[in-house]
Amino acid sequence: MNKLCHHFNALRSKFTSSWPRHHGLLWFSTATATAAAAKPPKPHSLVQYLIDSCGLSPESASKACVHLHKARSPSDPDSILRFLKQAGFGNAHVVKLVSKEPRFLYTNLDKTLKPKLLILQDLGLSEPDIADLVSESPCLLWSSDLRTRLQFWQSLLGTNENLLKACRRNSYLLRTSIAGRLMPNLSLLRERRVSDCQIANIVLRIPRLVTRTPEMFRALLVRAEELGFSSASSGGFLRALRCVACNTKEAFDAKCELLKSLGWSEADVVSVIKKHPMLFNLTEENIRQKMGFFAEEVGFEISYLLNNPVMFTLSLKRRLRPRHSVMRVLKGGEVPAVKASDFFMSNKSFLERYLVPNKEKVPGLYEAYVAACAEIMIRPIANMTLFRCFGFIGTTYLPEFQHTVI
Image (cartoon, rainbow, N blue to C red):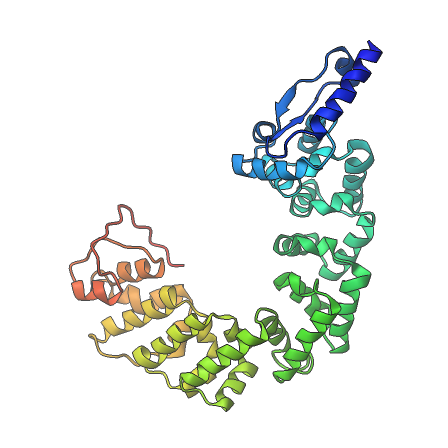
């Protein structure tokens, strides 16, 4: 019997190594070594296993198989899945984990998985936190310095909640070299008097920024300084850094030229860069549309826009245009004297100030405004002028209307 099993295992190894990559079949065995010796395992469809046992979609399972073909056959993937369930991993965690890193099914339960989860527990993470963190960053399971990495981030970010938030935005954080990238980049920030609290804020908002090579990171700092922000003591330095991180030099220059073509002077462009560099994170088309709205429909002068550049970051469809339409209706169709504060106030304040008092005076105004903010269509109202004022020019019907302003 032993000779027969030895012959079978050799045959199985030869068979699976020469199996076509596109076939999607691998050997799986969930039996014990004794049972396997008594009865050879049968081939199962790997794709179907990932769908049935791990909850992956057919498309995700097919993609995962590409990576699994390169790995050795697992001894007992079911034991891995059972352990995860016992450790607090839900179905969504398993799906995300296996989709991101299908080789996880081949992890050694006693030598790799259990010790790594024990380290996470020792560092104060709860079961839900561990499930979230591992499913977001499966690379943790193969990290030889897991404890050091997590202690580094816990110290910088302050809470496990912040750590999870940053990892959701960039799972590469926990794979980035601390000595080769993170420490040099943080040193460059500290040289410019950026506090650890501000650094934590940068990591939470744009975590991919600090994972760049020191050369690339230094180049971004130089670009921010060229805009007039020399250190953290300069107002807007962190916003400027975020701005240049989200724009190539060519894209940034193109947006400067666009503003000049729309009537802005060189001094105007420099002024808005210092006051609100985040304007340059908008697309050129977005900037062009909002300039047209402010200048042609509302009548704002460029000098007024320079004093209120944050207006550019407000949604044209869901805030700026609907509120301007309300003011026009209340003014009898005339161009109203709209102020920046009308756009900045909260939705609740705007409703209470302009819509609620005029519900009976202008029937349908409240509903049309809410629908416009939510970018949905409502039943055509009796006042077709009002209907067109909010951009509803068709006859689309909405069976149920939810009074919610976003």
